[in-house]
Length: 268
Image (cartoon, rainbow, N blue to C red; front, side):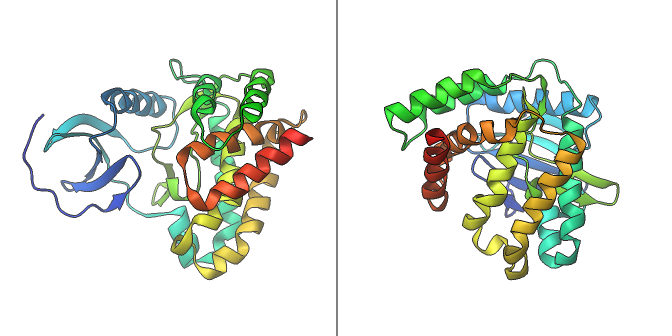
């Protein structure tokens, strides 16, 4: 569908897209023009497969075109994100840390056919990630080849701002990066966001939450491990690979701590 519709101000913005209200019960995730068409088509397929698998996620509509930009319509889920609610009610922090782990453990029990392999995606990212020496890149690619190539659903960008606390319970959003792989790769990504990404979050975190984010992280990891024991130490094996891949996102406040983590891990 093509249209010259005049849109109101976006209700949310991200690196790849803006989100607009769309009718009474929907939202429109409208991609920036630089995003390849296959990203959008893949997200639609993934969203439908995830819904069929029973993952709590917004109902997906269709691809539409507005003012030369393509987007996807989704059910509008009422509620605040987990991050927003914790900012407003920090006493819920421990409950939400366990909730985050439980949701991610739910993904780890699901296989969605047709998803791209996480190891394959990481391999391509490591080839182009900035700030790595040739020696570091070679070691990371060799490390990646030794890591388990799981088959379960990974969100690949799972954090408290991608969970909506709705009247029907928590709903996971933004499945654009979904892949098939090891759950510990997914946990490593979430862990890095909670440890290092929180330092770059600025005003997204209230002062009480900024002080308590370490406790949130510890509780989240502890609960996930209680549900899925890390008997082979996979989390730490995945950490330098995931940290190096995150360098490709070029988030300047995260650059130095990510490089430090990669360097120290490869020296072990």
